[in-house]
Every structure is written in structure tokens, then in C-alpha cells.
Length: 260
Image 1 (spheres, one colour):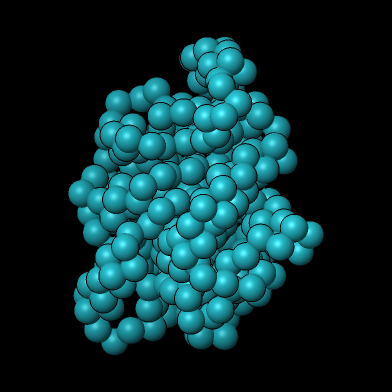
Image 2 (image 1 turned 90 degrees about the vertical axis):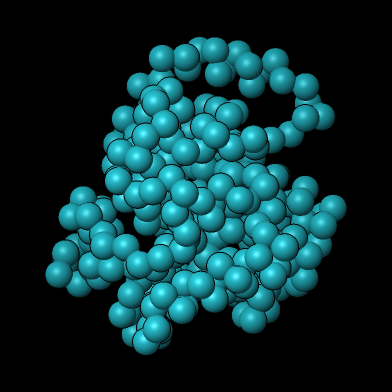
């Protein structure tokens, strides 16, 4: 696992660099898309590069990490709509090439199995963008999730719903109680994991992710077992890391050609 500590705007540039390098070498790459606040600056940077340098998503595929259950198709916080507004509509990404779990499906297990099959049929995810919840969840794999889990329905913890209430006019009652989410086992099959976390409120989750034991109580710790995992954090989110100085030294002395 590589840990990079830098200002938030630099972290967004580094993540965008990795995505751009992938798309330049493999225009039909498969990208894993996260919502929430963590990737927003990355999407802004990718949109800028599309606009100013011609970075193209025309042949790429996109798969979302998760989706709320039961939100109407036109709800602004439905994650498919969020991804459309934050990145897909800002670049040349055809709608049909960006998919998410079907949060309105009548047959939920069938929809989850179909989503797993769609990812596999696309050749798997080349680069997966991730955020990290304050309780250590990635996607909506809440504490206690199986480290081998697949796409499925999950009940959201009260803490996650409180964290997400800001997207629903700070009204907890509006936040759905269930979601469909890629499982930890599904996420771990992506070829490169890139997680972003900023702010002191993420410090304990980042500490557990990077330096704690692998445990279902902190689901993101499963990333320690991945052969190509990158953790991008600012100084505040890195404030609990015991080896922060070593991570800074390692990145400062990294060969320039190596990238993420």
C-alpha cells in the first residue's frame, strides 16, 4: 500500500494523473466511480482536462460503487444522477457506458447478481476510486461486513446516515435506510484501488486503514491485502498516522517515472 500525504488539491491532481495515464494507454478502460465528497475535486480536474486537453472518456466504461434503494429515478441524490452531474455529463461519456446497481429493482438479489456479471463481462475494473467513511466503510460496506462480500443490499448505520444527511437538507428522515453496494470482495478485484480522504474527522479511519489490523470492524483495512492500493490523504486526515514521516520521505524519494 502506498500512502501519499499532500494538500487536497494535489491529491486530486495525482488521482486524475493516474486516470489520465490509464485512459491515454487504454481508451476503453473500465473505471470504478465513487460518490460523496472525497472524489469531487478529482472529477473537477478530469472535467478540466477533458475541456482543455481533450482527455476522452468516449470509449471508457464506468461502474458505480453503490446506489440507494428506493429513491425515485429523478431524485437529485440518486447516485446515478450524482455521477451524471459531477462527471459523466461534463465529459464525452455516453450515458449507456456508465452503470450502477438498480436501486429500484423488484428482484434485488437478481439485480445484484446481474451487476456482478456486467462488471465481469466488461473485463473487470481497471481503476477504482474510493472514499473512506468515518467508521471505516468503503462503498456502503459498513463495519461487520464480510471481507469476501459481493454486491448486495445493506442496511446503513445511523452514523452513515448522519454523515450523508448533509446531502438531504440535513434531514435524517430523508436519508434512505438501505442501499445496494459492491462488496469488499468485488472491490478487491479491481486492478488498482485509489482511496482519497481529507479532514481531521477522517483521521482515525485512515489510521485504522493504513496501520491497524485487517478487520471487518474497519472494512477499508481489507485494502492492506491488495497488490496495488494507493491512499491519498491530506495532513489533517494523516494526523493519526504513526509512520507519517516515513510515508512523506518515501514519496519524496520515489522515482519520477513510477507514478501511482
